[in-house]
Amino acid sequence: MKVRYFAWMKRTVGLPEEQVEPPSEVRTVGDLVVWLRGRSPGHAEALAEGAAFGAAVDQRTATFDVPIAGAREVAFFPPFTGG
Image (cartoon, rainbow, N blue to C red; front, top):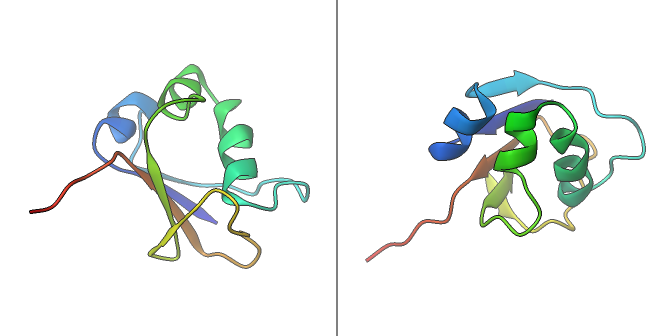
């Protein structure tokens, strides 16, 4: 699956996107976050527990309990506001 990072998260991780194959026990967005933290210090910082960021699975906003089985893309982005 492709994992994409936006805004400051892209700078902190050090890349805009990456192709990953998480282990079978990684079943939800939240599981993916925990697994990705172990990839590098930049991942750990960008996806730190308590950090404010959102997620999308296949371009649909998702909470951390959303399953990722069969997903082609998961994206992480900082909070945004509209007006």
